[in-house]
Image 1 (cartoon, rainbow, N blue to C red):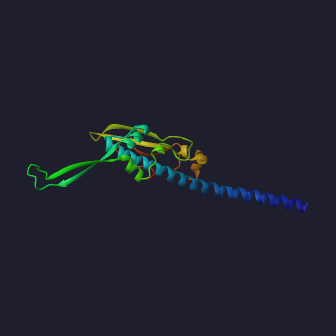
Image 2: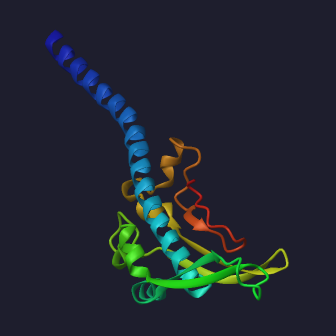
Image 3: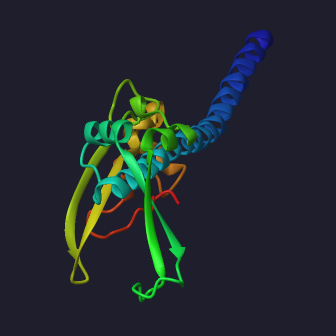
Length: 193
């Protein structure tokens, strides 16, 4: 009888130890997974933001879809304006000469290490695409271009997409957008920054 009681006690201790280990392991795994995934997705959103900035320097506005963004960056050129001092020209009251040169946008994109072919896809998913919006709004009595690109946390969080993980991080909401830009103001800030 004493042997059976010892075996039951050992099994109970092992079960409680396993439960304790899992209660510690899950929040650590969640925080590591969240940090890793957020870093990769924010890096991809930063690439999209830089691409949108180049697109805007070419066209004057932001791209409202990835097809237009990618095709423009592959075929068009970025204007670079050089301002030269010209004190000898009496007909030029500003004493400056503006020279514009053009360089292929794809060269800048490749130099930054941006892969245009996978730009629209959210990391850690099977082909999910970022939501992209662009428009013109009136902001402080001026027409301005705005853009917003992002996705919900639950799209790229994989096994941690459940709302129950919010108990480990009070700011975590799988329905919240992970994005840069804003359709209500001319900001390109990312909400992860």
